[in-house]
Amino acid sequence: MGILFIKALVLVTCFVELFSCHHPVISLGGKESHSPKPNFIIILADDIGWGDLGINWGKRKDTPNLDKMAMEGMRFVDFHSAASTCSPSRASLLTGRLGLRNGVTHNFAVTSVGGLPLNETTLAEVLKEAGYLTAAIGKWHLGHNGLHHPSFRGFDYYFGIPYSHDMGCTDTPGYNLPPCPACPQHSTTTSSHPRECYSEVALPLFENLTIIQQPVNLTSMATEYADKAVQFINYARLSSYQRQKIH
Image (cartoon, rainbow, N blue to C red; front, side, top):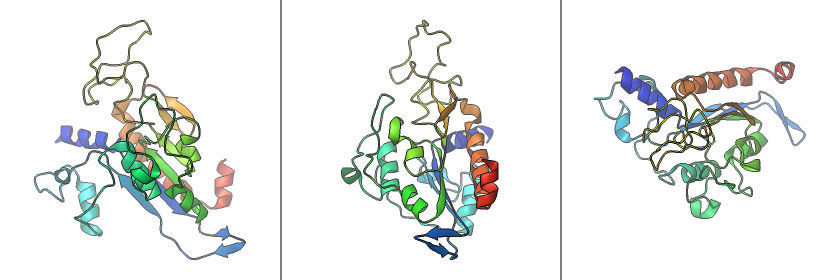
C-alpha cells in the first residue's frame, strides 16, 4: 500500500493545477463589483486512467481523498479530452480550442524555443480581467522560453517544472519511467544512458521566473506542490492591503 501511495503522489507531480481566487471587491471599468464569484481549482492529470481511482474500481484503496471528493460532489462518468498527449491537452484546456486551431498539436521538447502561440488568449488571462488571482502549480509544458513562460500567460504565481519530469536528469533515479541514471556528477562524465533518457540538462524547478532547484528532488516534489497550493489559497484570502504589506 505504501508503494502505491508513493506512486500516486508522483502522478500528482504531472498535474497542472490552476487556482483562481476572486477579489472580494474589485473595480471593473470604473464600477465596483460586490457580487460573489466562486473560487475553484482545476486539476489536469496526464496519465491517470479510469481504473486508477477507487471510486471507479473498488479494488483500489489508495485514492481516498479523490474518492471522497467524488462522493461528496458532482461526479461525471463521461469525459472527453481534446488530446491524449501533454502539451496539446494543456493548450486546449487553457484556450478552449482544439490543437488544429490553437497551433499546439505535438509535445514541446526541451530544445523547443516556442510554445503556446502568444496570440492565443488563456483562461488565466480571462479570469484576471474578471478580478481573479491566478496560479499554476505543477508541470507547464507549453513553452519555457521568453514570453511563453506561465508568468507571462496570465498567472500571478507559478511553481513547477517546465516540462515532463522525465525530460531532464535528476538525482533521484527510479521515479522516472523509463528508469534513467542520476545526473552526471562531472561535466566530463560519460555514461551509456538509454535513448529515452535526458542526460545533458538537469530538470529545473521554477518559482515564478527563478530556478530554485536544479536538479529537482522528485521525492519531495509532490509535498512541495501541495504546500505551495495551500500557501497561495491562504494568500488569496488576504485583503489587498494585507497582500501589499507582504510584498
